[in-house]
Length: 457
Image (cartoon, rainbow, N blue to C red; front, side):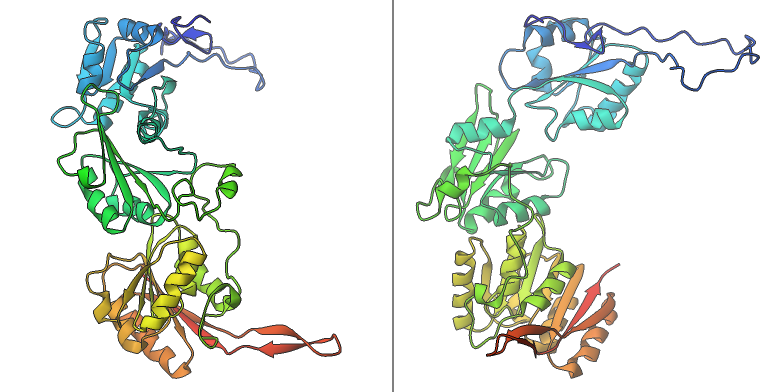
């Protein structure tokens, strides 16, 4: 097929209206004498294929212009429609602020396609990447897409960075919280912003976390702009993409990290599952065995459910074994610990494991004031006051409390119940194989720990 020829879908030109099957008269008698073979295919009308064109500021291809020229309905934002001004005479529907909502425009496209009318949807960049292609397919429409360059690829190209190791998150039409949590926690992130979650919601928070930040505005347009660091000041022109890199975690910026390991990468983005968890105690620097044992961490992690986009607290964090394990799953983690010496150990442990944990020096509940809301909390120390300070907050859905003293189990369970949590618990008592001098083994018991778990319905 030559470049510029109309694309064909299922043997039908994507720009050519598809005729619908003629309806059968409701008054026409239907013969039922002859049985119908269940293996015989039933002839169906060819569904109308909607053409989706990605616009990245460059001139549209001949095929895209041909699709617009023959379309009965063309849908897009103001700048998209301006790019095809004078091409064809189909109805134009503008979407965006002050115009038609995307959801309503999609319904109009679905209805027109159902009538056999040729439709074109114009969207930014790659419409199959956090774009309108999913919405159309979810509505049962057959789609043919000619994508432009995605805004993420364009943005990383402008700053001269590879991006196969980047995690891409979207706050467009979504809450900003999970995207911001991912951007704080991971080494390299691109944030697709939106009117309800603009760049302003991300830039200052990420810079305060010590990250490098860029804002790429109106890429591909004559007035495009990419700003970095101190230059990132509102207002920001839309559409825009926020890029953030942790200079201490990106091998391309920190010569102390191993670039050879990065060359072995075989998948994009952040690996959602670390290379093992419930690590042995000797994986962490600790003081006189004051560290949550691996068997306890294994169960606690299952209840906390750390992952990218979630914020977790480790209260009474000690040397940080639970906090670090959660951060290795990609969670945004805050560790609260009143012992300054333990806080220093925690920082060294997080560096050794190649992750970031925000460390807050102080005792709960006072030290919890002003922290960003958590999705889940592990309480490993601090007593009943620390638990009370956590469970009276509106935000955590899950709370896990580790207790060595059995007398505290009842009061902790009651605190959780009184604050709307469904409560259960388990006592963990493991015995590990320990070698004897003659080569045989005995079972060496470790101290039992009770995990009390609360979850809000």
